[in-house]
Image (cartoon, rainbow, N blue to C red; front, top):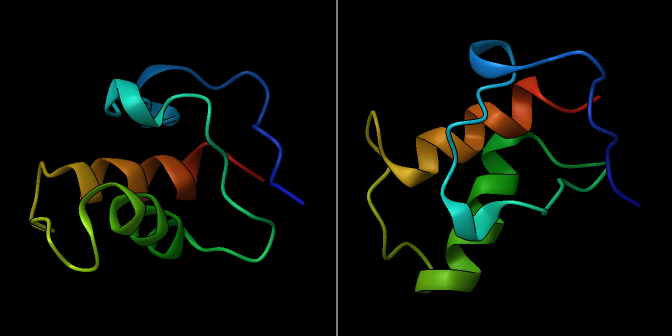
Length: 70
């Protein structure tokens, strides 16, 4: 089961500046933004083979997972 997108959010509120390959994915109901980002990036690049600092794909996906879903 996946989380639902919060209605009415756009731009900065939803943190929707994510990589195009991640569009259309949703976090699982039990996942935090961090867990969601880790799962997607581990699947794409292998466990831990990606940067996690500010402005990274990890950071963008994490914020999106935390802000845009309920």
